[in-house]
Amino acid sequence: MKNKDLLNIVSKFGTPTYVYDAGKIKSQFNRLVNSFKSVKNLKINYAVKALSNISILKYINKLGGGIDTVSIQEVMIGIKAGFPVEKIIYTPNGVSIEEIQTVAKMGVNINIDNLNILEQFGSSNPEIPICIRINPHVMAGGNSKISVGHIDSKFGISIHQIPLLLRIIKNTNIKVNGIHMHTGSDILDIEVFIHAAEILFEIASKFEDLEFIDFGSGFKVPYFLGDNETNIEELGEKLSKRFNEFCKNYGKNLTLAFEPGKFLVSEAGNFLCSVNSIKQTTSTVFAQVDTGFNHFIRPMMYGSNHHIKNISNPDDSERFYSVVGYICETDTFATNKRISKIYEGNILSFKNAGAYCFSMASNYNSRFKPSEILFHKNKAIEIRKRENIDDLLKNQIELEF
Image: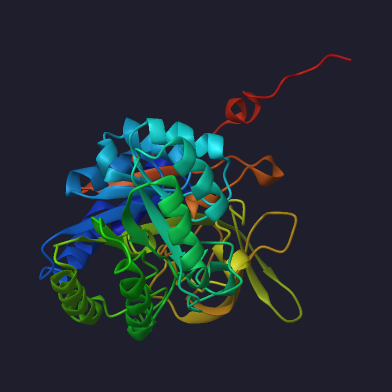
C-alpha cells in the first residue's frame, strides 16, 4: 500500500482506522511454506488471538491454513469462518474442564497443558486423541510478558513431569497424537528454536502414535526501519533437516506444525490516526492524536517501538515529537521520535499494527472501537464498522430511579 491509498481510506472511512494489506499476509504465508518445502507434511495454523476478524480468518482459510485457538469463542468464530474442524486446534490455558469437554464435542483437535486436566479428560474421554503441550524450560522472547516456556511459566507440562505424564496416559488409556511447545514471541535467535526442538524430539520419541509435532511460533518481525527479524529461511533449512531425520528414526512421516500470528499479520497492518493538536511544553513537543491505548496498547504494555510516519507530510524536514493519545492516563506511543513536520489534521500511520492491536482494544473512557479495512486487490473493503453509542449501550440494563 502507498501513502495515497492510506489517505484515500481515511477520506472514505475516517480515523482512527486499522488497515490490513491482504497481499502482505499472503506473501508471509507463502514465505513460511517455502522455507519448509523439504518437509513432506507441513501445517500452518494461524493464531487467531493475533487478529480475529472473521474476514481475515476466511482469507487465511483460502490460503490453505488452519487455525490455532485458545478459547471456545475462537473455535466458534473459526467454524463460522468455514474452517473444517480437523484444521482447528484448541490450546487453552487455565480454562475449566467443562469448556474443554464442550469443545471436544465439536470435533476439533484438543491440546492439553495441565496434568490434572489431562487425568480428568482422559478418564471421561479416552476415545478422543489429544495433543500435549510441553514446557521445555527455555527462556525466550522479546519481553518477559511474552516469554512462556521458562520454568516459572503457567504454560505447558514441565519436562521434569514426563514420568508422571506417561503414567497418567497409561492409566487413562488415552491416545496422544501430537506434541506441542511454544516458548515465546519475538524470538530472534534461531538456535533457541533448535535447542527447544531437540528437547521436543527427545520427548516425542517416548510416544508411539504421534501424527504431528507443533513447534509453536514466536518469530521476530521488524518493527521499524533497520530492525532485526528472524531469518525464517535459515530456520527452515536447519529445522527441516533435523525434523526429517527424526521422522526417519521414528519410522513415520509426521506433520510439522506451526502456529504463527504476528509473523503472518503484523507487517500487514497500518493504524491510521489524526493529529488533534500540537502542544509545546518547556521540554517537549507533543503530537496529540485521536486515539489512545484503548485502541493501540502495545507500546504501553510491552514497550514496543512502532515506526510512525506522517503520511500527510512525508517529505518535510524532521523534528522530534512525543506522540500521545487522548486517554486520561499516560498513553505515550513514542517519545522524542524523529517525524517529518506535523501539523494539526495530519494523518499518522503506525506500522506493524496487524497483530495484537485491534484484538486487544477496549472501550476505556467510553471511546468507540475503530473500523477495520482490508486492502485486497487494490480495493479498500470495510470488514468492521466503527462503533457508535448504541454499541456501547446495547448489553447494558438501564434502571430507572
